[in-house]
Image (cartoon, rainbow, N blue to C red; front, side, top):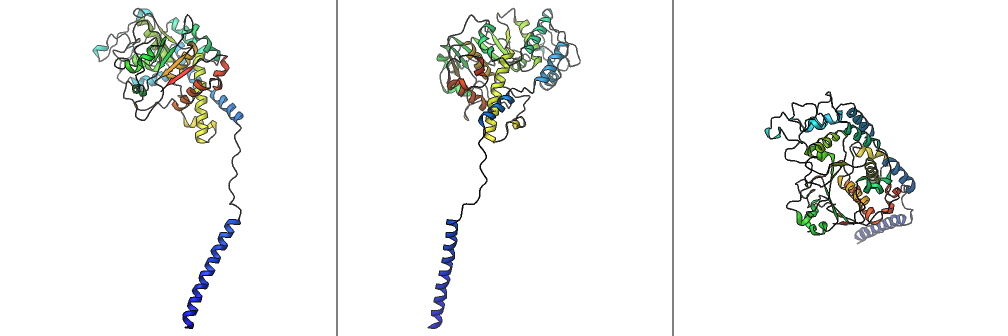
Length: 398
């Protein structure tokens, strides 16, 4: 009897000791101070951060290259950057001949392998970099003037009606983007009810009128679109017909050659030549979008704003055509309605094409943040608030 009793006592003693140890450990954990943590980072000085964003947004890393391109054109040479672009996009062009931008030299016959292109007035060959350009004096003046105006002057927004030769401000405007989300609603009649309708980058209307409307008063394109159009048979400078003015912003200085070709060959058939956006507006748009992109980068990554260049191709970064079209409408219209801006995982990038991917040179999320502020709190939009300009009501239809 004693041996079983001793065994039971030993087991009981073991249980008591284990319990005591567990209690002691729990007690120590309960009364011990919390483990030391890394001290929280000091709150960012928002005013200082904003000043940094404004400073960096004002830097244009492409300016030096643009200056070289303009100088090359004025000296009668095709810029090296344009020559590289030509080599990539037009490999099938083996025999290139000098482009003489004089009115009496158009149309330019094309000696290609494609008979249907031989006398297409829009298909003009560009010379090699080492060949001489004979620049029309009017084009030379336009190029000089455009580059001279590339400076920060937000007051240009209030001058847009006169710069575009409008008799006055337009009561209501619709800016129609190209997002596939347009196909979700039948906004066509609402769009056409506006006094003026802006369309982007030669987007098709036929077959989509119920969604996008059928009326066009202004065509807004970037020069890359015109440049590619000028190389394709059956693609015309004025896709929306006679009398619809085209407003174009310049992506490369060499694209002035495409504008000259288009204006010269179509002037007898169209009453409205292609107009180039005021370069001061280009600078304003670039600064606004870069600011919002910088702000988004800092908020999402926690990195310094100065690291933004490493995450983007800073020299190629650009605002979208739609962003500047909205800015033009804000400058010339008393009320602005915006359609077809935004994206969805189940919608095409463009309603009229099968493109799904976005372009890397744009930061659409940053532009959406700008649109939100423009519609809800225009007084906080940087650079725009320096314009001394009352932003009209802007409504986005999603």
